[in-house]
Length: 436
Ligand SMILES: C[S@@+](CC[C@H](N)C(=O)[O-])C[C@H]1O[C@@H](n2cnc3c(N)ncnc32)[C@H](O)[C@@H]1O
Image (cartoon, rainbow, N blue to C red; front, side):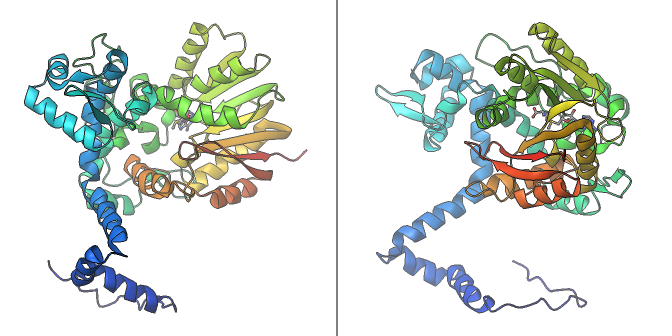
């Protein structure tokens, strides 16, 4: 391995009293001799093994993800839930894979606890596969990761391109994303090249597929993150992510609606509310509530369709526009921002929060929910997963509760408080009020 020599103009880094003991610990853990000793000494053996397994999981994590993807693409979990344990040969026939390949995949899935070996040489659901069997949202998330996977194949390329200014706001809301592929022109309007070709779900498990994620990574999947004129995006560019959001919306809605009662509100505005999946849930749990979605024009049109199909058009409506440029509909006593804030930089979010404050009635409530960075027990989801995900997307960052509180205060909100959710890994929430 080549040595890394620092550039000659490098600044002398600051020091701290903890550098000594922590440097000693680092050298110890980096020492093969110490690790060999720790692996055999009875009192340290279990720690050494656990740490080695943790390192291996990081080394091999991308393989695990692709085993999961193969299972999801084959609808293996749904099949085993619907029909019960089966032999490798039977599953191979159903999934149209060579028996040897199927056995290889099944054994990998057993090792990852996605599946379990069952008596008589059969395979059934494992403790980590069973929750995926009926969760359309999680399955859709897994499948759309093919786009992220492309971006992360060359992490240094991603980091270098992004460090040139991806997603940064120059103060007047314009961003530059040098080096990142962007959706533009005819390619974006071509369903095949944009990666979206409808989402009718084939009836048979074998070979069933959702629409493929685009071939050019997340920047293309989330086109609004790379343009200052998102309202001009063609409907076909909005479909893939809108379907993903609708499929995965229960992950957030369940958390929010368990944690917060809508009964005391009369008018809800769901800003960036997508195709109205949350709006429908809200209207169903609170039959007195008027609900409005504000989203890009093409997405708002899909929300109106959803409301009509659900027979909720009398109470649910949708307005199209750009929430950074256009005024939000006034008069709501509750505004929700679900999985919206982490998509954008601070300057844009501050502008959006101020617009929300203007739109709310005096004493109105803002409910902001998304996965937060620094969530105890879910740190990987924040800075590791969303940090890299949003970098690949081209805009936005995961924020800690403390940072969100600062932004809310800057925008003029008061009485900010945390709303405890059952599964912060899926969504944490903050409530804030406008002054009376
Ligand atoms: C990550 S999705 C979240 C959707 C929904 N709240 C949910 O949780 O399922 C972000 C939403 O914000 C919308 N959006 C992004 N930029 C926008 C803009 N400038 N104006 C209006 N809507 C925008 C997108 O169309 C998308 O529906």
